[in-house]
Structures are given as C-alpha cells and as structure tokens.
Length: 318
Ligand code: FAD
Image (tube, rainbow, N blue to C red; front, side, top):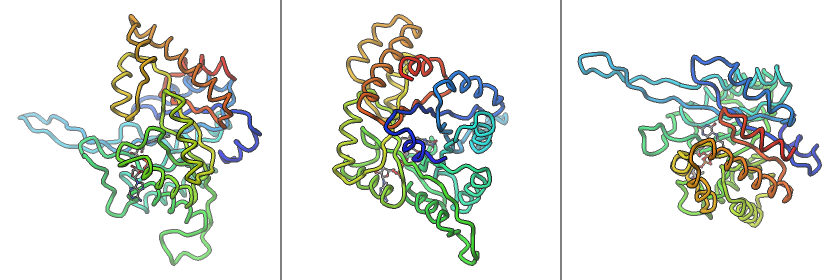
C-alpha cells in the first residue's frame, strides 16, 4: 500500500513510522531486526530505509603512498526493503538519491523495486561527497530532486529512457520528497526553497517528510507557509530523540537545524549521557504530544539504529 493510502485509511488518526539506516558493510541484518522488532507493537504502516552514497577513503599502501578508493559503507537499501516486507509485512520506503547515479542506474534500481512489489519511494538529491564543497551530479545523472521526481513520474506513465521501448510497463510509485522547516542550507531564503518544494509537488510528489526539528513552532510555521504557497499534500514531521551531549553540536552542523535554548540548557545540566537520554525522551514526548494534538498525519522518528528512546516515546503516545 502507498504511504498516502495509509494516511487516508487512518481517517485523521496519527500514525507511527520510523526511518532506519542500513547496517555498516560487514554487519549482519540481525542488528537491524533487533532494532525494529520492539517498535512493531506501534504498528508502523511503513518504514523508511535511507540510501548512502559512495565515499572516498585513503588506504595506506606503505612508503608514504596513499591509495584513494571509492566505497559504499552502508549498502543494502533495496535488500533491506525486501527483508522488511517479508519479515514484517510492512511497506518499506526506500530512499533514492540523485548523487552518484546515472539516470540509467536509477531506472534499473526502480525496476528492481517494482519487481519486488515496492511501490513507495522517497526521492532526494543527496548531499555532496564529503570532500566536495558543492553537489555534483553524475554526467548523465539527475541534478536536483525534481529531476528524479520527473524520472519516476515518467516511469509511472510507462516512459523509460529508451524511447524505442514499445508498451513498456508503467510503474506505480507513490513519491515522497523532503522539506525543511528551517530551510535547506543551500537555499538563499525560505521563499526560494518553498518555490522549489512546490515544483516537486506540482510535478508529482504526493507527500513531504520534514527534516528533524526541535521546536514545533517551526514546523507549524512551515506548514502554514506551504499552504499559503499552494502546497496541499500531507507534511509528515520528522523527529529525532537526542541521546548524547555531542548531538548539541553534531546535529546543527550536519543537518543545519537549531537546538532551542530550553533544550540546550536542560542538556547542559546533565552529568552524563544517561541523563541526556532521559531529557531527549521527555522532549520527544512533549514534541510528539503537541504535534499529535495538532492532528499531524504521521509521527516519523529518525531512529538511527537506536530503538529504546523511540520505543519509550511511542509508548506514551500509541
Ligand atoms: P532538492 O529538492 O534538489 O533541493 C536542494 C537545494 O537546491 C535546495 O536548496 C533547493 O532550494 C534547491 N533547488 C531545488 N530545485 C532547484 C532547481 N531546479 N534549481 C535551483 N535550485 C534548486 N540524503 C541521503 O544521501 N540519503 C538519504 O537517505 C536521505 N534521506 C533524507 C530524508 C529526509 C526526510 C530529509 C529531509 C533529507 C534526507 N537526506 C538524505 C538529505 C538530502 O539528500 C539533503 O538534504 C540534500 O542536500 C537535499 O536533498 P533534497 O531532496 O531536499 O534536494
């Protein structure tokens, strides 16, 4: 079932969902199952699986020689999606990204997903490789998420890259895209960011999942601005429980989001990460309750391989 169908079927009741990241190469999928298993009691209708692009690593080959290698540290998104469907009978939502892929590689990945009976995708541009300052698409790749939205919409209409294909099978992907209550870091301003978000929706995206935020007001204002701009699809809030003091600097630097004073002050008072985790859970419960009371369609948790905080938050709500 599609994400939008799940939202419709819930008839206004807030759903629980989560995002997971593939295990590091060499780790077993059991670690992921151990993480998802305790969250199944909250009946997630769908589970997002992130996609991680390639990275450069340098291997020391002796004599001061360094060899530059390209590796993917967390492969397995498509396989994990199939495993989630098989083990839990839950709809997986693979993330698909522009970065590192030609359009043909993307088309082939979408064919794999279609053959597996997966009919949801979250379409993203992806970030630049750590060493590159700006995002560079592949020579024959998609440059922005909207280009990838257009490619998926094309396949949904039976248009493949090879225009000589006759009667090609149309896919039927429900397309989600990302939105940023605190603005995407590259966008000159919110107006321009919303203009491009609207284009993604006008071209076929059926729902939006937000970047994490720690102040609900930012989400509410973002939703208002989207509605004013004529973006009328469901906007799913993304939430992340804080678990370490390090998150106070790591999350703003990676995700370009603010930590509100009140949360920061509470975390600063903590003697260790055990206490930080408790503050993160309390904050997550407070945020989730307010969002639920406001009637959000889904509470979507960035669990990042740690289920216990999400489990405690969900227990108080679902
Ligand atoms: P876009 O929508 O393409 O926007 C990127 C920037 O370009 C924005 O500043 C936008 O305003 C601007 N822009 C958009 N279209 C145009 C245009 N036509 N012309 C000029 N400017 C334009 N990354 C991963 O690598 N893997 C993941 O699994 C992953 N999952 C994510 C899940 C969520 C919910 C979110 C919020 C982010 C996720 N990301 C993931 C991170 C995401 O890839 C980055 O934030 C990336 O920098 C932007 O992706 P986007 O799809 O929002 O890009």
